[in-house]
Image 1 (cartoon, rainbow, N blue to C red):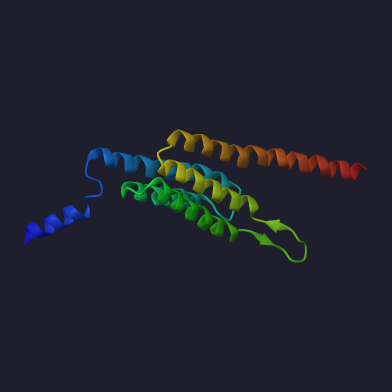
Image 2: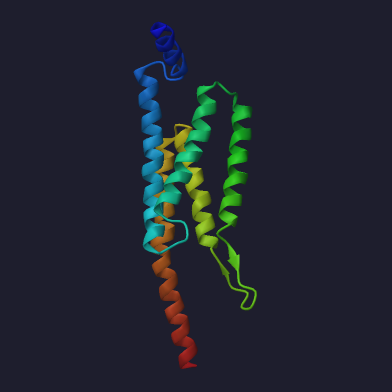
Amino acid sequence: MWQQVIDTLRDEFSDLPDVTQWTRLLVRLGLAVLLGALIGYERERRDSAAGLRTHMLVALGTALFVLVPQQAGLSAADLSRVIQGIIAGVGFLGAGAVIKHAESGVVQGLTTAAGIWATAAVGVAVGLGREATAIASAVIVVVILGLLFHLEKRMKLKASAVLRDS
């Protein structure tokens, strides 16, 4: 009886048959979490609606959604449909962060939604084994969110100063 239990457990965990496969899985999922954390940390610092944990989970989830079909041997065409579903689903998730105020017409949350979408793309890149592309993309996302935030702030200050002086 115990041998049957052991055999069943071995069969259940046979999707990663060797150390190479385990290493690949752990590196990709770990990198997805780290890159999601990098982007999420920047958003957390700005008190964004979607912060550290959200971005980590989006990157991890999208990497996993790509990794599992690859492990199952799906064709490139089938994998492209999985990626299309990810794009649509994450777009829906990001749309929940966008709010338009009826009285003022001001729209909030677009940067949060775009950040979630970009984080998902980074996760897909990691899941596909495009680690260098994912790292470069995550760095660019952080530069856009961080450095350009300061540039926008300066531009708004200058614009308000010009309006006061006129």
